[in-house]
Length: 538
Image (cartoon, rainbow, N blue to C red; front, top):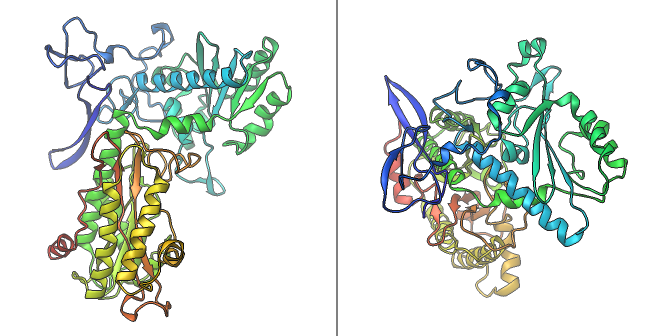
């Protein structure tokens, strides 16, 4: 059996330029290993299935009648890439690159099924529910100069719409649900300054929701809902509202009418879904990790003594973007020498001296999915003996932890193993006393690695942050493995030769039924590989 909606990506060179091409490999879960090869009408690939099987790409997952689609307005930009405006990025019926309407529809359906299950356990008499998930709001650096907009990832995950000032509303019963998207209305004056908007017709055509209305109509819609409804459940993240103004002016008033039986948070359900990646998401994760690994490799080759940390930042960003990344996933750490002992050092404004190590922690975002990679290397091209001893200790710990990444273990249990192994390495190096053991060893080790081994990874760098690290890993989860040893230069307890050295090695890992897939393996990390790479520096 083959999983549905598997997407692949490739770099295609044409006429001296480089383009990112995304395409499907297969269609549905009901494929047979034998059968007839039949060309899928909607994608430039082949689907192997029985001759009487309808390709999943013909089942869009949307319920949009033809009469509701915009009339021959195929040239208009919707405010985000769409198949008709960006055919180099999206296939037909994809809402965002690599993710189609069918998958977004399945996500909403799974969410509602869990809403109903939870309601039946706690509020069995409640049969009606209303879900409200707002988009992010635009943030400004000063006056009318905006930051690059990044969507609320829970909202993005549920519908794929990428404009601010929007709301996903789902009305659900135990037998059916209706999805409405409230979006910014078309406005020629604002679009002159801010760019195109999808409007209600564009949002409907792009996302495949049941209906799309103007954002301004939300308050009236909720008032009308109250007139015909009592004893229903509200699912809305009220603890830390994504859009505080909308919360105060509209949604809080709706809740304060107290017609509902309860108010529950959406976030725990959405994040639990996001934790396990679909095949299409796994492909996007592979691609963003591949881009980061290649970019980091080129940055390592580019480095040299007396280089400015900021230059390496710029090189990493350049190499990511020319490979198709949208932007860096976060401000990278580029830390030479003792600055590597500041875990989140992002000033990146010093020169890296000959003989020092440089620790670089960087990643990129590709169509909503992020990579997170760290390498440490000698700026001069070769490790000194103390540097190599510390580096090999961290590398051995990382390799052991990677081998433990199997279904059933938790991030916390992996962290405990890392602490024990790191403590033993520090004893062998003479940094910690050899008679330490148990809790005393862990306590003494902690200052030399004060961070966790791992976090979940996906649409956010520290993905699904509400999900505890104590739960068992499952196939489809993506995590980081990032042990480190940090010896500050003022640490009088450590041997002098190790002072001022900070090392971290980080890879991104997809949990599978068998051996974990290290998705950032394309970036060298063995000392011999690193030194050979440095010999090819440009």
